[in-house]
Amino acid sequence: MIIKTATLKDKEQILDILYEIAVHLKSKQITQWLEWITPTKTDLKWIEDLINNDSFYLIIADNSTVGIFSLSDQDDKYWGKSIEKSKYLHSLAVLPHYKNNQFGKNVIDLLKLDLKEKNYTFLRLDCISSNKKLKQYYLNQGFNEVGLTNVGVSSFTLMEYNL
Image (cartoon, rainbow, N blue to C red; front, side, top):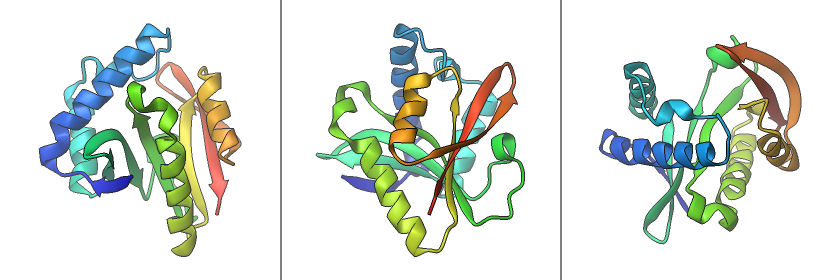
């Protein structure tokens, strides 16, 4: 598995992955990420901004992109301003046909090691509160639930891993 920093040339591939995962989740009656079926200009700008800030990544295996994630220094939308040295994980997604290959877990494990070596305090993320399976996945990775926040009409569980 290789982690590659995304460039603007990767934008369409990222959007294709987000679309495929959104359709897959919708087929399972999970309402998370429906915005990626028909993304708005704001959604597209969010992706471009992350790419331009070298904060969006591709997960590569066997010369194929199998997933994506973003990692940023702040997350005002969900977490508010933070003074702790933290990184914020978003959009960790593995294509459905690669689901059982541990790519998500391996990415999280690599991030934990890398951030600990760089003296970060926390690896943080949010997940939609209604997706119990996803919350349990992150709990199994050692994250702790530390709060709830509402964005729009949805409730999100705030989770962090103490490095």
